[in-house]
Image 1: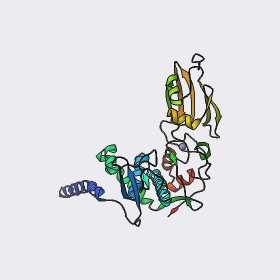
Image 2: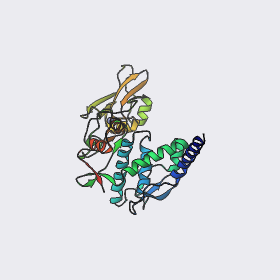
Image 3: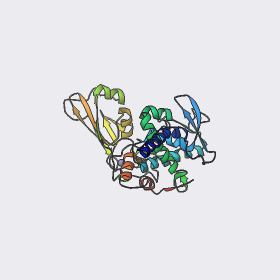
Image 4: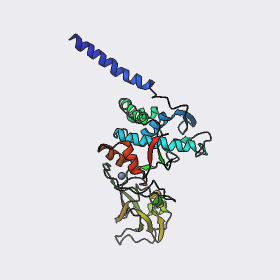
Length: 313
Ligand SMILES: [Zn+2]
């Protein structure tokens, strides 16, 4: 009985002590004097963070913390590579905020959230569990980066490719040797198919294309895919006689991907999309699937980034 009492007391001290420990813990700080100068939009200030504190905040913002640890590690190495490439370039990417290496605005750089934001997003109980996990993903991959030909890569990633990633040249101006199309063997997106519907006036407004002459009674979608990429995604789209690159079309209608089909129902055009994001580089749900199948973060990175090295800087 006395033993049980002591064990209970020890357990209580340990459990209540973990949150205190985590608040104090900032991880191993032996990364030299390297700091990330982050422009935070919410407080309109530049904050100096240790590299891994920054990396953990990116992982928290960019990938669900409930993902397996090897997927989180792959995300951490991608996040570190991304920011080091910016720092090595002189931190001049964000001309809006001189003196900052990166911004936390997801439209300008990779997203980042503070620990306060994590608490808000996850709730206090999950915060201690998840912060420890993402911090572990950052610390366990300390100094690891991705290189191609000895240089830091641009480690782009997206949510779900839908079965096969896209070649960078299909989405952007240049085809980059390590951003080739690869298959995605274990994609774990629980809901890969989504639909979005628009009335013709809504489409006209978003696309800036005159839709007044489009016959709706024909029962045929006014959107024709006139060219496809090798992975089957739309590359060019024709709407009311106007040809638009599918990436622009997707952006204007805010579709989840260029992997879509369309049909007409009543007075609405229905788009059925597969996957989420541009499809280039690491597929996050694919990384989750690979981790679930026992792959390490190195295997995941080397799968999605063709011909790269995962090494210490
Ligand atoms: Zn995928």
